[in-house]
Length: 502
Image (cartoon, rainbow, N blue to C red; front, side):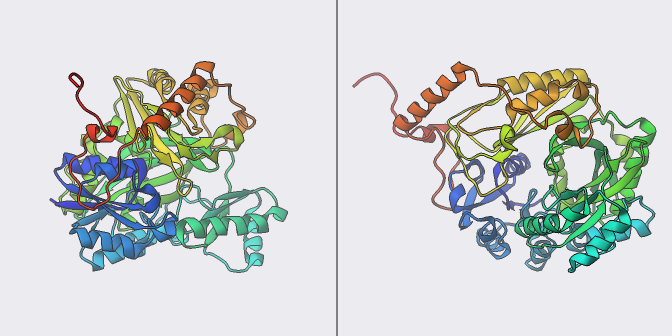
């Protein structure tokens, strides 16, 4: 088993990985940018190393600095989480060259599935159903236009080197293509360091259904069933659930076996997700492989009882997969809501600032993967996800109700969040009945303006802000050195003494 893992990420996913490592008795190293010095992941790791200024390109995307941090602290392995360098084949290759275990797929498989165009070509040869689209990328706008005309509008622009909705654009008509291409290329360059984009036919009113796979280094492979991820804003998922209401046992088995075939022809190992689009006639099409731990992995963990972070680490250590397909079954129903620092009323623009007060929901079947605390700062430089609220119940109706109760108990003051919006989505009759398409938000919440906050919450915000200014941050002080002692909540309170006496 590994002795020390460098977690090359930040926020809630870094905290999640650190917790998983602790459960396995593995020490951890956090990397952080200058603006993240007091972040929760820094405080919960055993050691921490600053790797550069706030911009991701100078810190979390800087391969040399991340590698140096791992070598400097004697880390055996690097876990990249999701985003940043998680799907960067060159980073995985550097880890291999430096004899650092990369907790993810091998660099060759990552290079293949990470290049969406090559991946499509490989799947088409293997007989995997794919969406009609380009066979390669272009440098000339005229070539993109020719391909778009052959497919017929609408078309989808997608980044070749990454996912998560970055660089993605829907183009309804020819005159909008140039502007959308330039915009998509800029976003792809910023997110992945590669501006390459390609086109595929846009399927209207689809469902987004993905399958979690695990593969070891000895040819053993399983899928851990599906996640329905159709509730999206700006092509990025905000609510996920399992099981999908669109799948019957036969279709579930067929899609699951296809997902395993995708992993097999890719030479894939470790944890990965095979994404499909499902049309209204229940035809499914290969979309892409996400070569990493997904944001929504807790949904699978709750319905399968399998800890995916533990499995990733064990596979990376060279252990054989101790699961068979026959061992696995879906139990109950799980839903995840992503809690973002953003303003749903204002086109989901990111929100930054200080978290003045945080109350996390709890109770039977409630899990909150969180990366913030009362008094912490939410910077402007990174993806605005703050936490993920996940619930499990015996059936979907109870799961929906449990999620609503948990969202009602969730209080974050100081920055705008998506909590109120998520409540309205969960309560919507179409969601309650399981009629979820990728167009759900645009169709049912396009002009959503939200509700005024109750007066008592406004007062609580003012009280919290006043308390914060008088007593300093509620948060925990981050480390100034790399090696850190065990975190103690008493240390976060500033000067104090036991009452009584003079």
